[in-house]
Length: 83
Image (tube, rainbow, N blue to C red; front, side, top):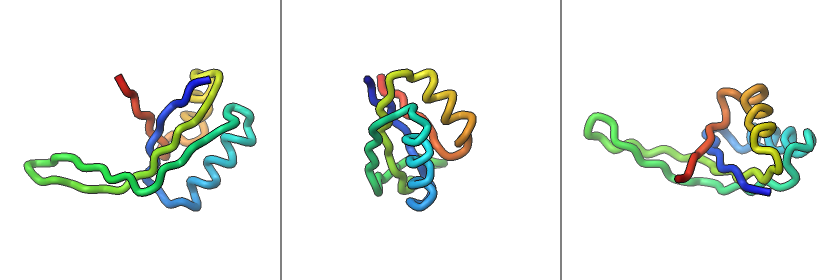
């Protein structure tokens, strides 16, 4: 089983519903959430700061998980690819 990393920019109440839905679907049996991660980006020579949450979702079938998330939460969860 591998962990797949996603960011989430909305409130904790909505994220709790997302986590509950993923766990009840059976696609994952373990999710880790990190709060208040600060994101810094450069936009027209101005530094933009925003807060995000990072969630690590453990799944045996990565394709099934990404399909489920794209169908049910297309605007809410964004995958982070580490290389």
